[in-house]
Amino acid sequence: MNLNNLIQPIASFLNCSTPNEWIAAAIQPENLDVLLIDHMICELKAAQTAMWLMRKYAVDKASGDQLLAWLSPYENFIYKREGRLEDLRDLKGISKKLVIRPDSKYGQDLVDKMVMLIREELHHFYQVLEIMEEKGVDYKSITPGRYAKGMMRHVKTHEPDTLIDKLICGAYIEARSCERFAKLAPHVDKRLGDFYVSLLRSEARHFQDYLVLAEEIAGHDISERIAYFGHVEAELISTPDSDFKFHSGLPVFKV
Image (cartoon, rainbow, N blue to C red; front, side):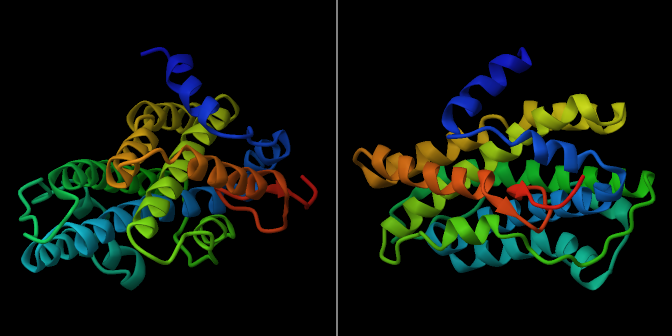
């Protein structure tokens, strides 16, 4: 599919474009380490979020334990410095064969979409690590940016609105990631640019998967809530932000 066809629905969904000042900061050599490390963490967190949604809302305990086991080699590699990079190449055991809890209201569709998302995000996590190794970028702990927390603080605290809001937030986070892949690709070296284009091709539908789930679970029009989070997200992206990250806002430092 033509890249313009992929990015057009994403650009229409988002309420603002990434500021040119962020692109200028992101392509500075001194920011490459943080850009790659934070991107890698984002891929892992996307997989963790999908796992959390399934464990909380859909699957039985045994399946929940299976999900934890799927992610543990990736988490251990980062958080405990255990294992080898090559051990993360193959996504062994990750499938949709999970048992839905009898009392779950959300069922197989949530599991199907989230398992596919986990598979893709963990594969991309491995790919970012591979590029970091090629470029001599060592993993180091970094503080989280304001973006995800800034979105989540607006999530309602009663169900099913909590789940609906979290799915809407997931849609915006996925869409913004893809928009930034497209924005960055022409300005970085070919290896990284080709990688960002491949991610855009792979992840362009993720935001729609989240929205479809949110609409199905709500059972009513949620366009007002989607618009609300669109304004929240755009403010985080377009207002001054002193902490450069993959999803940070308008840089207030010199580039």
